[in-house]
Length: 185
Ligand SMILES: *[C@@H]1O[C@H](CO)[C@@H](O)[C@H](O)[C@H]1NC(C)=O
Ligand SMILES: *[C@@H]1O[C@H](CO)[C@@H](O)[C@H](O)[C@H]1NC(C)=O
Ligand SMILES: *[C@@H]1O[C@H](CO)[C@@H](O)[C@H](O)[C@H]1NC(C)=O
Ligand SMILES: *[C@@H]1O[C@H](CO)[C@@H](O)[C@H](O)[C@H]1NC(C)=O
Image 1 (cartoon, rainbow, N blue to C red):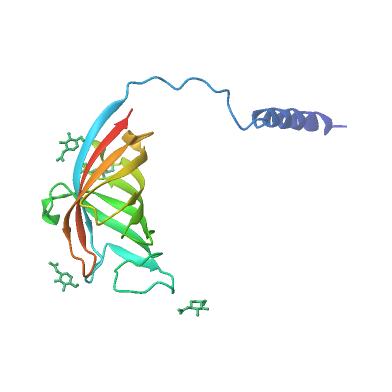
Image 2 (image 1 turned 30 degrees about the vertical axis):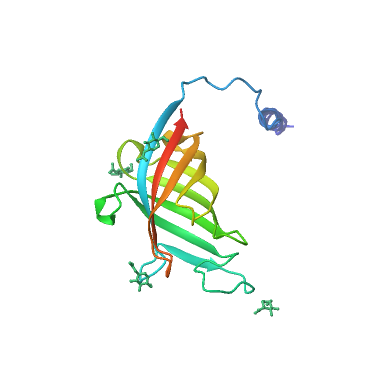
């Protein structure tokens, strides 16, 4: 009988816990209405496939596509590319792009990009924007969708306008100018 109060207490604690976890969702309420801001980002993306220290590497490719292309249909690359303020690598690294691109077109050279652009300097140090889009790389000017972000870019959306600044068609090395319009809180 001496054990009973202890058992009773355990039962009460158990009910409290059960109540706290009874539901996996909250009541829906309007999102806090903070004013939205627009920030423009301008930088250069250095994608290096050739040489001894590539920043983008081939992860896999199907055994059915052949040809001289650096990235035949179905190839998947992982990248950790430096971002700089100016077109030269010596102009100062401001962040890096990490992610994947997949050669995803059967006709024109086009990659689908899954990138997280993380910034390591200035106001947006520690924040990142997330991009997910097709990227028809032979068009001089093209656009990628910004679908989200982290840190100061939490809940971001926007678009990135791209221009190829340099391309080595024989090994795929490229420097791309990014002009990004980000809408965030
Ligand atoms: C591709 O791989 C599959 C599965 O291993 C094999 O059956 C096929 O013969 C390969 N094709 C070529 C062109 O190597
Ligand atoms: C960026 O943030 C990291 C982590 O807070 C810090 O260690 C680093 O010094 C910062 N870099 C610059 C250039 O502000
Ligand atoms: C382009 O790539 C080829 C093959 O790797 C290399 O020999 C050549 O020097 C590169 N050209 C430039 C301008 O970087
Ligand atoms: C970047 O894009 C914005 C908005 O589209 C435009 O006003 C600005 O001139 C562009 N900057 C560069 C360097 O292309």
